[in-house]
Length: 394
Ligand code: LMR
Image (cartoon, rainbow, N blue to C red; front, side):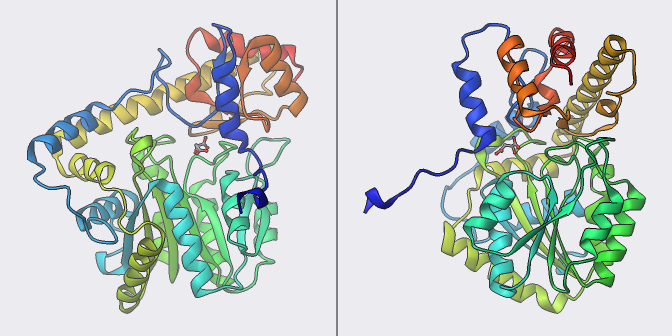
């Protein structure tokens, strides 16, 4: 049987991780996979998470199964974190999932089950695993314009025009904040316009929010999903705790299905539990429980917020430093968009050949589409990157 298997295409983000690891140069710079790193290049366990782990170690009395959809305390904590008061508890069905990717996969399976002919619309570009999973599930998909390669901002006109061509019942995947891979995001008023169009065209929003707190702050970053929850009849949200709690390997995510009509919630909740059962039975609990402890304890929550805000403002400073360094070197404002982008990533707008040149000549590792992880920089590497960008003729 195994001889019938064919080699699968390499994931461009994950293969870059391996290439970086194998590079013997001491001064190499890793701007690849979306993992936060401090100025020392470490990805530390956040203080509040460490404290919650100790608390859990001392108080946990069993490792027996949770519910099929995970722990209700976790659902409530995540609903409040992502949606605030935008949706009442009885309007939201939720299931814990293995990371944000698990939530995306379960959401797509729900769409396939409920509406097999629905096309899933993706931003061009998007996180490469979105189309990869949709293709794997054999679902119809289409792209809407999103990134303007000239301004490095959002091509909002193109986005609205393309979504206008969607048919009623189609699903529109939107990045809740901190767009991956571009770093270009919708403004509040653009979210409102998108919401208006979605409702008028009877399209269903599906929000992937994996970087809440990495852009303009926890609440500002949730403006889009909250506005949609208030205005749309139905929506799906896949949220990840990997980045904002720094618990990547624990695999903590949540899928939420929001409906204005609470009479639908029980049926949706049952479907989410069923989908978990079919794919992995019970979801992982450790990371979810840490998140619940941190969010439910005033002191831990305050400490987490402080550390998260430090991460966020640190990335903003790196953005500004890089934009300033490039301003100096090019005597132009061509790279000012780097300071305007938000979140962990910016798409630089370099060609594949320029990306390869920066890797070979300066040991700078960014994804081949020129996505850079800003958190991979520090005070020493900003000038090196600026030199590499100029030398490559970007
Ligand atoms: C990324 O985009 O780099 C992260 O979301 C990690 C991943 O799984 O691709």
